[in-house]
Amino acid sequence: MSGLISWGPFAIQVGLLAVIAAVLTAIIAVRWLSRTHGASAKEAAELLQNAAFISFIVWKFGHVLFAPSVVWDRPLALLMMNGGTREAGLAVTAAIVYLAVKLRRNSIPPRLFLDLMAVGAVAAVIVYAAIDWKYGRTTSLPWGLVLNDPEYRYHPVSAYTVIVACIVALLLWVRRKSSGTGELFRIAAMYMGLGLLAVSFGDVPQPSVLLLSPFQWQALVLAGVGIIFSFSMHNKGERR
Image (cartoon, rainbow, N blue to C red; front, top):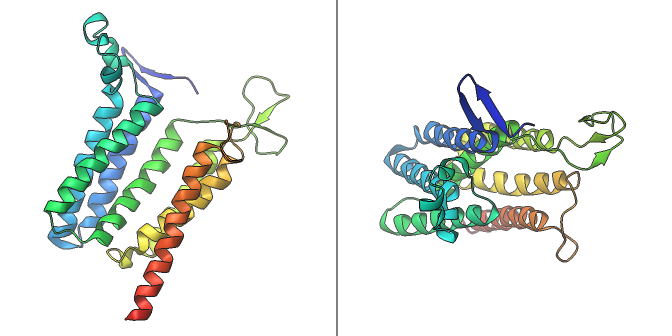
């Protein structure tokens, strides 16, 4: 997919559009779920909205921290440049620090917060993957997509990601009445982790660490968190 979308005199980078749309979708999804859970849920939704905004700002302009000279050398470049992996890590760290500080000061039930976060994250993944299209390794499967040379087909990695996230979103919708118990977080973490791990095998090969790529390790950790959370909920239910 082209890296730039133009509409008349206006143009925007596909990656930036995908991030903005994903953040807005996550906020809408969290707001929607929080409507039926009282003041605590609305407060949690507000915190998640602020954290998403902080993450976006840090991701978009985080490169200034590593190359401050760009501010006076190429100020207009600030609007055109997007963050990379380094800035994304910094953005996540900033959001975690913000949420850690705020959650300590507010009496928001942790499981309710995790459920809201899970719904927003899954919604964001669907929108981001649908806009910022990505292709994987070559394949002989009939649904592989042709780019330039008709001799080669490629795994539609973004389509796989959207399918996985939509299935998880459907599970969350079916179980929406259990929101506030941590059930939605458990479902999202476990199945998104396993699903993204499966999707990664169709992606372009990445440098591996102990047989897996960094992304595969992240997906495995996410699935592991969901599985551990499942045992935690099961044990808590037995004690009751």
